[in-house]
Length: 137
Image 1 (cartoon, rainbow, N blue to C red):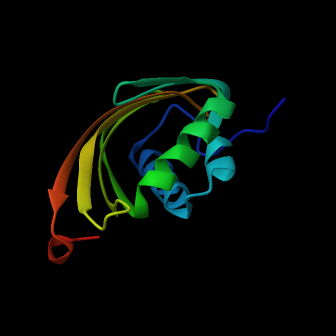
Image 2 (cartoon, rainbow, N blue to C red; image 1 turned 135 degrees about the horizontal axis):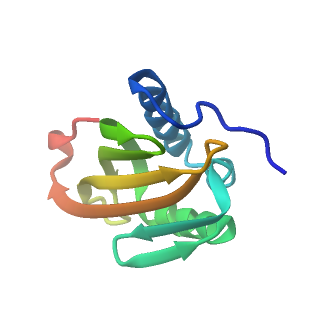
């Protein structure tokens, strides 16, 4: 049995903003094991065209992600919330092994269990090649 991961639903504006900031801070560590602890054991994700189930698959996915997306930096923004669900807008910048920079942006839909762990994460993401001089983050 896991402890509660505060804040827990139902969310108000303050607690929703805290949850988004915590997610942003965690993802910017690029530590898959730490990040995975914010999700339920049987979490369900769609990330682009990939379907991920459970913390172990989350960890493997994040390891692959950051082996490709170098010098990753993320910014998240709350767009809406109700009960145990949130809509989040994000953008992040990274470069590949060749040095080409990208800005990836999109939306995530989140659903949390009663203990504050994310049970579902659905992400739609687009990548825009940019010059290094165009970086914002």
